[in-house]
Image (cartoon, rainbow, N blue to C red; front, top):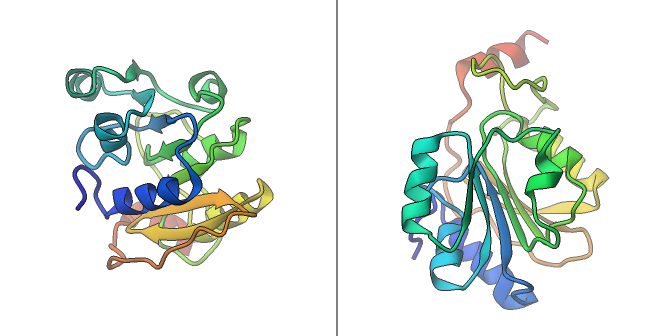
Length: 197
């Protein structure tokens, strides 16, 4: 049973580490929140350490209170600082910042064993322009684009939960069937951008 996550991600994360080993038990969560966390249970119950990052100070205070073992950082993550933030080696990287997720993944130099990344449920190639602006225009990246970027970096999609794709090394045989209804979480502003192209 999932303790924090939104779409049963914890079950698949645990299956992966139980099958392929726990490694160094180091993780990084970009866009970390206690609610809907893909990583909190690993820190609480499985002795993982790592870096939890969010740009919202209130969310970071909650994380520090509930997960005192973690290195919690209040920061905006972008292509200029991602490689200074993600530890190497890293067993699990979760990226969910509702904006530059794919840009961060593409610019990452380290090679996490398991990557969880948010993707828009859309069958066309789409990637919003890189932006550090607080105002949202179009945002996110389509599943099709993330799948292609993963292939370019030597990863493949192992499965999907809700809006999250699980990426593993292309040589890894880990996979699972999607076990939830695909939510309609694509904002109208993104659909308008996609339809206008």
